[in-house]
Image (cartoon, rainbow, N blue to C red; front, side, top):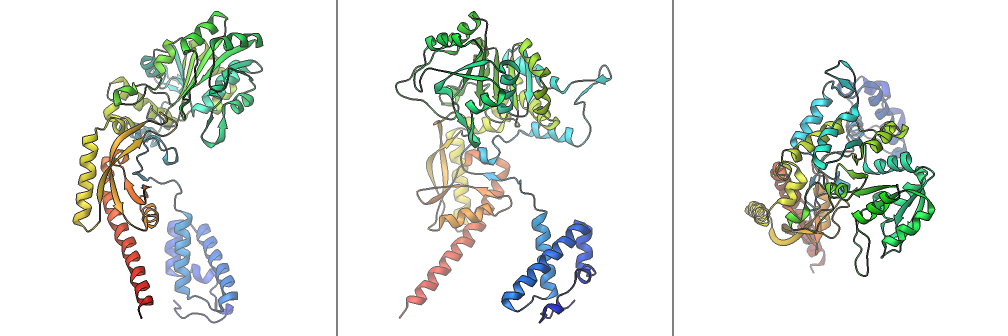
Length: 477
């Protein structure tokens, strides 16, 4: 191999010449010929552009190294696991709810081979994917029927399209919310073909407002739970039961978009009460829509439970096929629901295990982390702090926690270094200090987390000290 830097573009190796090197033969075996040729051409083109400015070329060996780096970059997945040390339990940007081991295993089992997704094993004939998870959802919620789609927004869209197209839908102005990504309830209504009928004011809505809206000949009342913000002060709203009684007395339906959709009583964990799916159904709601990857703690999915005849209409609607859940979501969801059925959600569903973790347990973890790092030269401390639920659930609610604190003047450099680790680590800054919350770090991630903190701290701190020494030398007389 030529290790002498070429002096003109005529000396630049051709694509064919590089392909004949031993290194490229190995790369073709690993990445395929087409991708290797593409990368070689890109690097040679870059070399020509650089030569026009620098009047020098790299050696053949250096070009090959850049081709290797180019191939690694092109085949690096963009979706990778991260360690969430931010203390936000349902971190939307980090994929919301981590799955339980049983849910992950169920999805893997169905992914690695064939499954009875749409096959009736007893009859030996074609079956329906719609039955998976339905029986368990009915047992857990008391609903007559259930349907699973790919996310909650899709579920609401399906309900409105199937039941209210070109008909009026009554909703309080206090519930015209916007969820993540700029999706707004009025826009969803418009897209579904339903006609929006607003009642009440931003802060106060009365049952009489719903009664007056009956003049618009609506087909249903929609309640959108404010799961991502609070309305405080001079406010009032009729209860869900009152709205349902009025609707049923006039022959129209009530749909409750719960969003986060908890199946457990959140007051047991020292938080404000979050309406549960069971409570909505008991209040007389005809259909309840909620998410699978928020307070349920499962995969992304939209769950619709309620009256059997309405669920049947949803199943027959053409949109239902377009937004159906796939086999991985259905298998992971079923396994997650079994945790609730067996009364083990607090132990087996990661988000509930995090929510239920005691202050003492978290303090012990944080102190253990601090001691481990101190022995290895890291200036680590602990302090009291708060965790949040996040993910558009329980707005404003916090849980007491103990934080690991790394005091460092160049805290942004440490955050960046942590994000470049494999796996990346997501922490946060409080009062110019990098903090790590044990609540959202899975037990099996502890060793990786601490070693990454140690490595990044040493690199960042060494770089910072080098800059300080340089500055002192420059100002020395």
